[in-house]
Amino acid sequence: MQLFLYVHTHWDREWYLPFESFRCQLPSLLDRVLNGLDDGSLPNFYLDGQAAIITDALEIAPHLADRIKQQMALGKLSAGPWYILADQMLVSGESLIRNLKLGLETTSKFGKPAMIGYCPDTFGHSQDLPRILSGFGINNAIVWRGVGKVETNPVFWWQSPDGSRVLTYHLNRGYYQTQFHEDKSTDDLSKSLKTWLNHSPETNHLANSYCSFIDGALCPVGGDHIFPPKDFSTTIESIDEKLKGEGIDTWVIQPNDFINLLSA
Image 1: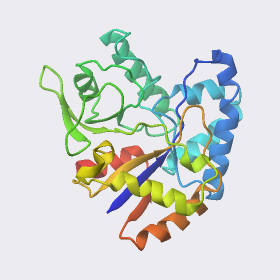
Image 2: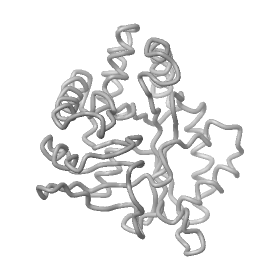
Image 3: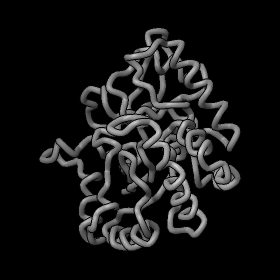
Image 4: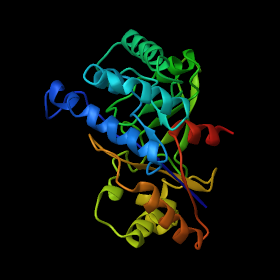
């Protein structure tokens, strides 16, 4: 079996704090991420599917731009394709199209955009999203909220009324997984991670995280306004050693690389 992890943050531009309060935290987030990518303590990192994280931060800390470009060129840092993660039920279809167009254009100034329909925290989805994504050459999606029960596997074809469809992975246990940010032993972390691969009838509430197509599961590492966990590479090496003894391979992967693997 295989366990795929992706390290990320989920960043609301404005929520329980005003926009400027959250934006002031972004340079510190990016600095921590870039330092971790530089010294190898962080294998890779995903900037929540939205280019606005980069542009908002650079308005305060423009000196980070070259480092961002360097890590995106290496494939260790990824962002986009959206400009922001919009709630699809509150905006028009044209707004979503312009959002995606702007996101791809903005991200391209720093590196290759992640070509995935990443919508982890949308409370409702437009039936035309597969059509919109397909129009930009994106043939997949990763979602959480707003999806009904998916039987057997967390993978399904999402189809718009016009027939456009995208291969979709359902994060049925959510994007918010902060166990690596907590004071847990590697034994406890290993035990927790194994539940993502549990697909016995007795554990239906966990079953859909296992995907038979890849004999594995995708597990997020991150949450709302959270910096990357410290010493992540060291921790995951220890966990990988433990799980290999149980026939489980552990990979830290970018979401777009995972979806490409799923599509192969």
